[in-house]
Length: 284
Ligand SMILES: [Mn+2]
Figure (cartoon, protein in one colour):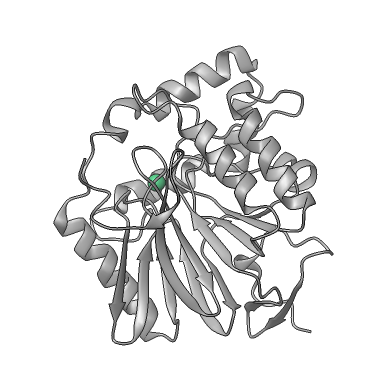
């Protein structure tokens, strides 16, 4: 068994049902896999406050059905992990993630540009597998490449510098010296995205740039590339391979499902059955 390149996997507990080969995580679980991103929990979006409740209900529905759940970043609008404090607004979703894990689903959490400081509480207490960059794996016979999507396209050089600064462990440790009653509101202020999160549209140019990045990854041998971040759900077939963006869980609750090697895009509703996703999540 080969441990593979370190940068793919920052945490792999003993109970993960996988094998390594040439740096790829080979999952041995054949039940459907689910992919979600960008709920930005913890930030007030007037009119969209039901998303945490609905996400908890969705997680309950996955119990016994999902072999794995992949959170492709920005589940929380920010994540500051204190040793002795949990933010109450996150509790319900964390509780349902833990329940999901206890009933046999393997939950993987890729850092986003808002929730990059994933810590030991998520791994050891909740039981998720956390990743700080992209993740490559083989699942149901398909080679998948997952990435939140931040810092990938041209014009993000400034952000990439900021990204490495914010991810500095010394800086993060210093930040946590502040009492949570100060550190949490301050992080909320820095995150500061409440207004544009539900009005923002990813420009066509940017969407084209993400698709182009996906094309490059697909040309290097991946069968399926999955990003989040743009908040624009889509599933495109590119030369026989697939690029999927998981969309968001603010205005529309979109998710991807991989079942028997087939990837499909769905929309969850709290008051009617789940449906195949149609239209664009970038439109109201
Ligand atoms: Mn993002």
